[in-house]
Image 1 (tube, rainbow, N blue to C red):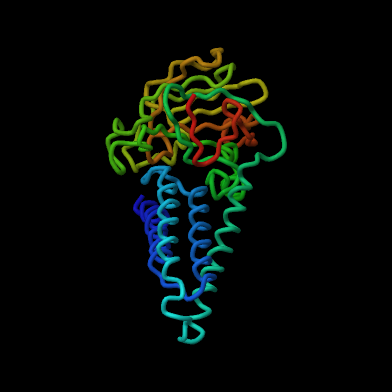
Image 2 (cartoon, rainbow, N blue to C red):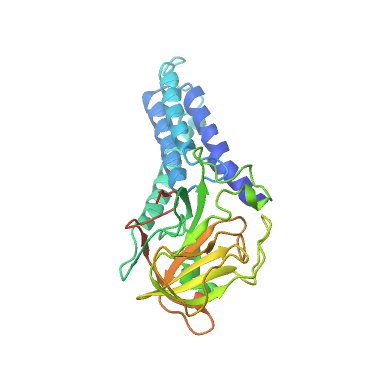
Length: 316
């Protein structure tokens, strides 16, 4: 958890502020220096807007950075060439330009890689209704690139092949009108997470294939690696199996073999299994082998007709 918090603060707060300060406070000898400072700042901002998981800071913070960047660029424009050209040799004349170009090229390459995950792979996809209703929900992980969906590592690593069914999964939380997913930074009290206890509805009509209901809800950031799905419902819906996982203990309302209609209550969001904080895990798959339903082939999915990726917001 500490590592995740550090990386998040570094990538989404400290680096953007440092680039913003460079853009606003530097005295550029030429317009090209000023332009490259601005391009590298907005290239980095575009990258973190797509790949960042805006949980500790609200999802709209990049818009604040963008507006601040315009003000900083306008301020530095008035100082272009004020002190004449650089005279300190290679390090002072070439290195700043090279660093801006390098940062821009890196961000552009990573951004293109991340955006490639907005397009589902070819093949049969599954259309589902939203399993969550009556609020604003935020996709933490989703899409078809590992930069925006860490579930994709189950396709890349042979050691994780028995979990490959979740490769295209979505992790979803609820946010309030201020963009916060909880009351507090990373509270241990499950009730302080806005999605905890949220009703979960069947996203399709089908037969209940498997249910788990009695695993404990973990205290963040603890998790249960032995039971990764935690409490869950597995539905057989037409051509796909659909898993809804990390449900609240004793909240499941259906039983194996039962037929459910789309929109029927299945249970409530909890924090069981391999989950560091309350959220709903949702994925679709071709039928997995007997005894291991997480080893099936993953299937792309659409929710209410939309392809959801990291940072998508859903208001059913």
